[in-house]
Image (cartoon, rainbow over all chains, first blue to last red):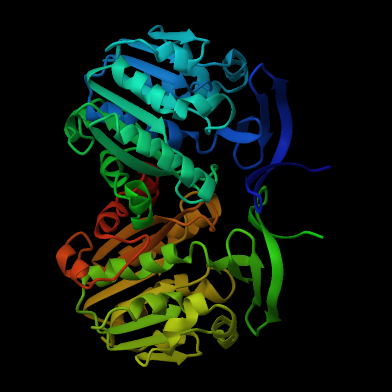
Length: 280
Length: 280
C-alpha cells in the first residue's frame, strides 16, 4: 500500500508527498491537525490539510521571518509572536541574548501541544524562560496595547479560517499602536504567483501602507508552499531594513542556513510583476 | 474524465497539472515531446515527461537567462544559444538592436518544428533575420571555435539524455575558447534544493571555476520546476555582473515582467546553504 498527502495549490495544480507513516490526527476547536512522516520532507504538520511546517524547509521560513527584523534592530527586547504554534519562530528568536521577553499568542493550544510532542525540531525554543505562551485570539490580545513591544511577528496561516482576522485593517492598526517608536511588524504576506494568494498579498499591502510610514516586502524560496515564491511584509515606524549593521549581526555568531546579510538585502529586490502588483 | 500530467520531482514528491487537452505527442530521435493545454499553466511542452516550458512562468526563465548578461555588456553582438528549442531565449535576445547575429544550435529539429506550430508565445523570435538555426549537437558545434561569440547561453535540459554532454569540462573549455575577450557564458545550473539537482549544480560549478576567471551564480523563482528555486551560472573572461550600467539598460526601454536592474543585483545574493554548497 502507498499513502500520499496531496495539497491542492489550485483546482488544477496538486502537490503530493509520499507518506511513510501517520503520526497524529486530531480535530481541535479551530482546525484539523495532522502530523505524518514523509519520504522527502521528513516530519510534516498540516492544518486543515495545508502544509504548515516540515523538517526539510522550515528553516527558510523561520529564519526569514525573524532575522531580517533582528538585524535591522539588534536592540529589540520585547517581542510578540502571533500564531506560530509549531514554535519555529520562537526557536530563532531565543538565539538573541538581547531579547528579554517573548509573548507568543496562539489561538489553538492543541497545535502547540502536538508540536511539543511530535515536532521537537521546531518546538524546542518554547521552553526558554523568556517565553510566555498565551492561548488566546491574537486579535483580541493586541487590541488596546500601547507601545508594549519592539517587534510583532504575524506568523499566520492563510487568511481563511482562524487566520482571517490577522489580515484586517483594524488588526494592523492595533499592531501599530502596540509597537514602540522603533517598532517593527513582520507579517506573512502570501505569494504573488497564483491569483488567489496574490489578491491577499495586495489586500494586506494596501491596508498596511495606510498605517505604517515604512512598508517593504521581501521574498524567499519556500519549496513546500504553493509556487515556492513567498513573501513577508516589513513595516515600521521609521526603521529601514536596508540600513542595518552587518558587522553587528555577524558578531552575534548566529549560524544560519538561509539568512545572511547579503540575502537580507537581496530579498527586498523583487521581480517587476510583484513590484507592479504592490504599487497598483 | 479527468486527465492529469504528473511530474515526479523525487520518488516521493509529485507535481500534477490538470490537462484540458492533449495537443501534440511525438517521439523524436532524441526524446519524447508532448504539448498539452492545462487549466492553470496554459500551454505546456514537456520533454521525456519533464516540464520544459509553459505559458504561465516561461517569462521568468527566459528573461533571467538573457537580460543579466545583456545588461552586463550591452555591446554584445554575436550570440550562440545552445538548446533552447522552444525559442523563448531567442525571443528575449532579438529585443536588443545591438545584437547582429544569433546562432541557435538545437540538437532536436522536431522540438523547434513543434514549437513553431504550437508555441507561438515562445517561438516568434525565431523568425528574426539575425537568427540562424543549426540542427546539430551543440558540443560538436562549439568545438574548435576561437573567439567567435560575445555571449554563449546554454539553455539545456537536465544532465540526463541529450543534455548530458553540456555539463562536461570539455564542453565548458570549448565555450571558453569560443568566446572573445569580453565573453560571457550563461548556463542552466540546476537547483540547490533536492539532492540530485544540487549534485549537478556542484559538479557544473566545480568544472567552470577551473576554466573561467569570473564565476558567479544567480537564482530565480521558477514555480513549474522542481522546488521552484533555480539557478543560472554566470562565467566570464573578466566582466563582473555586479558592475553594470543600470541607466544604459533602462534606456533601451525593454519591458520585462521579472527582470529589472534591482533583481539583477539581488539574484546574486544567495542563501547560506547554497553558498556553502558552491564553495565546498
